[in-house]
Image (cartoon, rainbow, N blue to C red; front, side):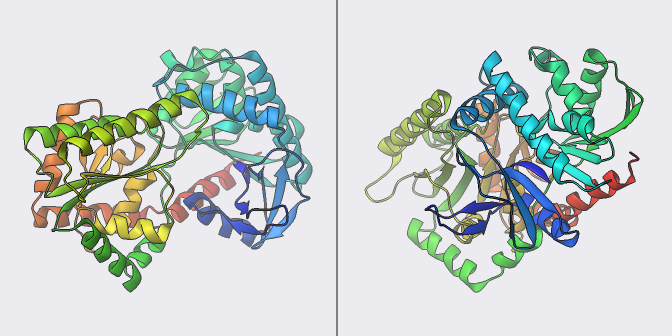
Length: 454
């Protein structure tokens, strides 16, 4: 496994212990790696010297060193200030700097070299996400005996956007070093084939691209969550008790609208809050009967665009509470922090409606987490049509998040949904997520990778 980050994090202090990182990717891939005594190559998350490879929970962890300058240029620069906005529809203007690109190439080369030195003959190597799109091509040149897979966790853009990338051919040829290239949605896979045929000498047909004497398979593999883990926790007495406490804290039988997002401009948090305010102003929602709980996980706080978003969201929250709240009863509960899963699950269970309204998202796992945490088959999901999850959770209330009137109407509909209709929709969505969980996602990709021929 080759990913931007290792599957572990270190507790504070130089002598801190390694703990398994939370998240569906780690839980899905760790069992497969343990079974074959595999290794995970990644960055520790801090600058400077790294420890020697070490074993943790049955997996060999192989740290890759990044300097402070490389974090600034490769990670924060090229990856998150060029590729991230470009791949998310240019919601913010991407920046392109040649020194960022040089650092990006160097870091990708280091990851590829590490994999080439570590992998035994004929091994399978699975490379993850947009930070490392050059690795498959570099690794192919170093080790043509390997079977190489790549999966992109974010959207893959259409030609009119991707064409502006100064290094478009290099990125595409990097991806074409893989035997199997995976995307979240069918649209991303189609965009990939069209771009390959436009900017490289590769030629494709459905599911296969012929590139310089090799066949590169591609397709969409929608990622998911560990359904059983969330569902099991939602059935515990502790989760049910905490959910009841949340209702008691809010008081007076008020209904709960919930948003759970990383504080990122792609998530549409500011537009969502504006739609909620318009419902309050019109009288469609009574502030004494309904509140909005918005969790916004801090993200890239030193980057200007994120600082501006934080300031705007906090301004909106202040104005709404200033206008509609009463003493001791805010209308918007804003949590600018990360929550542990044992607190997040009861919050999902307490919410009458979940608002998942990104402006662009590869998948969005929060929508699936909410569904998994509703064994009572209650609640409603308002879901952006610009998420990969909208292709699977068709019983959600689908919305164009740019349409404030339409978004406000969907929120009103979610609160008015009859119980029998809530149950019908939630039951179907739970079945979909249960059948297509993160473990199935990993198995399907790895099985298809195993079927490729080097």
